[in-house]
Length: 196
Image (tube, rainbow, N blue to C red; front, top):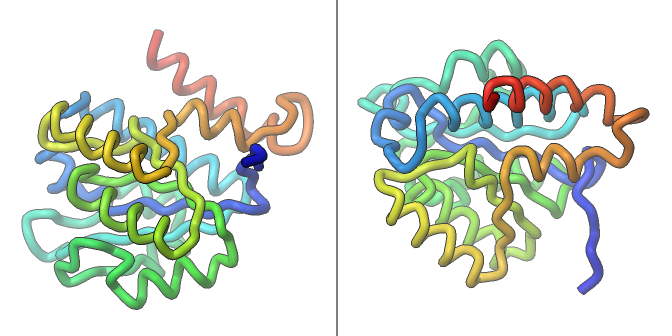
């Protein structure tokens, strides 16, 4: 199969259940890292004008609201977020599935909490529906590292690509000096600065 690069023109960003309570269940990676990478994805989507679909599960329960920074970065997507009543696989929610279809994109960039519950099933479902996906592992996380590894391996075995935040941001850029490059480069710089 020929390599068909993801770009702001052909891909949509799906951020699933990055909620203030849900992240407290995530222990497979440092919480600050997952939050930083999630917000980097949101910033890049905003800068590049990419379609974004946000969803949450049971905001009125222990999961709580989405990270408040998402409301600041993506106010329209936040206002239009799909508030699921408890459906595990977001693609089983007709409003979420309709929102993804409405993007008109066949390529999906997906991250969420928890990988082993709220990412794996919509990823598998989307793959079955004919979408091409990249799951961003370091903007996602599970209850344990083992649980995360198993979920990521199962998705890869099913033909779903797994990438890092830095990988997908770099892929979205054709040239660092023009077009999307100058808009994404500062976001990448923020990540590297925090890593140092």
